[in-house]
Length: 79
Image (tube, rainbow, N blue to C red; front, side, top):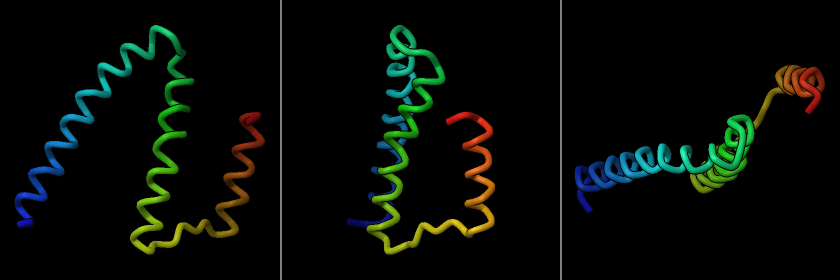
C-alpha cells in the first residue's frame, strides 16, 4: 500500500475515533462522573499504548528518581 494511502486511512480512523468520543462522552456522563470517565480512558489507553510500544521494540522505563516522585504523588493523592 502506498504511504499516502496509509496516511489517509490513518487520518480517517483518527477523525472517526475523535468524533465518536464526543458521543461516547455524552452517553457516559449520564451514568458516570467525569473523574470516573477519565480513569476509564486511562485504563483503556495505557495498555494499548504499552502494547504498541512493545510491538515496536521500544522500552518503557522510568528512571529511579522519577519513580520516587511518582510514588510521592501517588501517596499524596491518596490513591
